[in-house]
Length: 276
Ligand SMILES: NC(=O)c1ccc[n+]([C@@H]2O[C@H](COP(=O)([O-])OP(=O)(O)OC[C@H]3O[C@@H](n4cnc5c(N)ncnc54)[C@H](OP(=O)(O)O)[C@@H]3O)[C@@H](O)[C@H]2O)c1
Image (cartoon, rainbow, N blue to C red; front, top):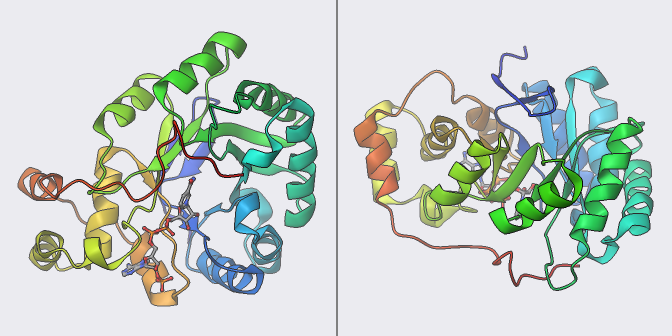
């Protein structure tokens, strides 16, 4: 069943090339969405402490027929728990809510440069990895400047940088930086959160040319950029569509059509966004 291609991370582990987002599902919805997604072939699930659905995600992982070792469970450290000891404690709370003996990918959700504790959190995450409680460690919404600091002060680079990425906000420079450092770029809001991008005439026309859906065009665009999209869907049909993006290809002209869409950021600027 599991035929999704994988990326090899800079710590030697592998991760599926498409995952399932779970925000803003509640525990009950997340349990159902995750269980169904695993049945449909997903093997990567994305949650966060701040989504308040880790318990539901954990139940979805535990409740299905897919062996735990095949599933990459991601969660994230919230801003209010930055700091060395705080990160260790926050991780234990996440692990308990998820009901897992280890987490596969643990990310710092936002850098919060004004608070200036993300390096301390990173040191705690290195320890969690050394203790085998976390398989891979990474960041989210980090700029090159933040990553340079992690590398300079700890010598350890993130395996993943999960960033806002969709055709309205293609992040060419940050993607190139991540690639240069051997960091896999994960795309959050890969469908631009919905209708504006999915109904864009350029996206719809490329979908018609290839006989697939607009959502599949967008996700294939991520795959061809080398990025790893984590679309959220709680709908069985759309979940299946979103995984079925490895049997067709956008040609250079079609990639160019998508590249010419207008620019618009949906989320916060990592230099100033504060989410606790
Ligand atoms: N690290 C961060 O700071 C950060 C920030 C935001 C999000 N995230 C993560 O990234 C994940 C994805 O981002 P997102 O949820 O913001 O946006 P998204 O995945 O771009 O879009 C989700 C929306 O698109 C719909 N949809 C999904 N597949 C579709 C398809 N094939 N055709 C038409 N509509 C479709 C979904 O509705 P249905 O459920 O009804 O299909 C939902 O309304 C989140 O769930 C979360 O895990 C991380």
